Image 1 (cartoon, helix red, strand yellow):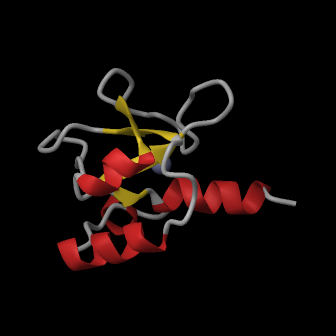
Image 2: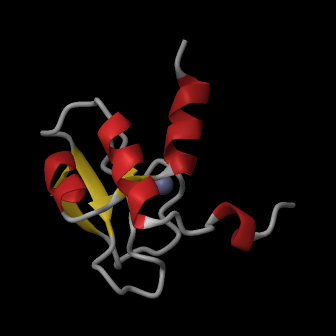
Length: 92
Ligand SMILES: [Zn+2]
């Protein structure tokens, strides 16, 4: 089992803006993020599925706020790698 430390290693702000710039999905999509400074990290934004659930699990229920992708990028968030991995795996 990989350690959380490894998975959740925080990217630098340069890496964050790079990753966000590479996210070409619809800026009007709803994504879930944590307020800056939240103990969960507060730097990533997560994809939502059709049911409005966080794709990678939503282990911090109640701590997330929904924003648009554009808003998440503007506030310095980066796409969640776990969500992308899961969605990538599910694509046909
Ligand atoms: Zn996620």
